[in-house]
Image (cartoon, rainbow over all chains, first blue to last red; front, side, top):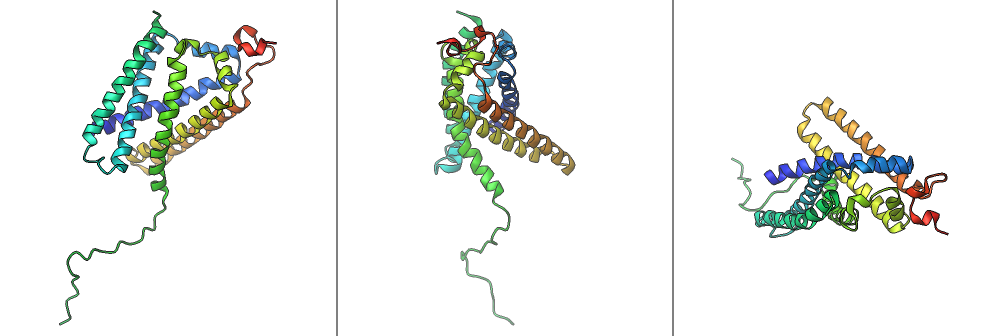
Length: 110
Length: 150
């Protein structure tokens, strides 16, 4: 049940970011200066940390979504749904371990 | 007395043919099919834009120009835009249907949702196809190197 709640919460969060993200990208049609000024805010330490939250939410939604698909379409899915959840969490951890140090280096230097 | 018409055990029963539309089944299937494609498109998007090279620091006008000079990334971003927006809009529709109990509230929220989604999809599509990588009169220092080369 909590995996379902988290799927909804991350889904809503990602949706609202997507609206903002299309709008900020649309600034390339205004001027290079306008686009660069807004994108510069994405490179600040605070937004750098927010991007970690965004990526964590996206990766959770992705792997839990694939788990939902397996539960719906794979014969052994419903029986193994709990194992599939922990599998999704392990994959989430692996991706975050790959992303986090790299992103922290980009944002904070080093 | 009339003869018993009780059916034999385990003879099953006939369902009434559904008269409802297949819209919800289609929406349910779309979420799963688009979800699989979105995992690939978004992981690729994040890998190229946040992981490779200088990550988020490398993103500027010239970076976007460099990507959209290639039809591969134009199509990638176009499919990503449409699938993500329709997937997200349908998810929001489901959530509105679950929590907005008064019909007036539900319809109002859905109208806002559909209008916002239509605007974003239209805007994003126009931006991808009308993008000018080397705008006339722009500061050359802000443009991709291919604008000034040759």
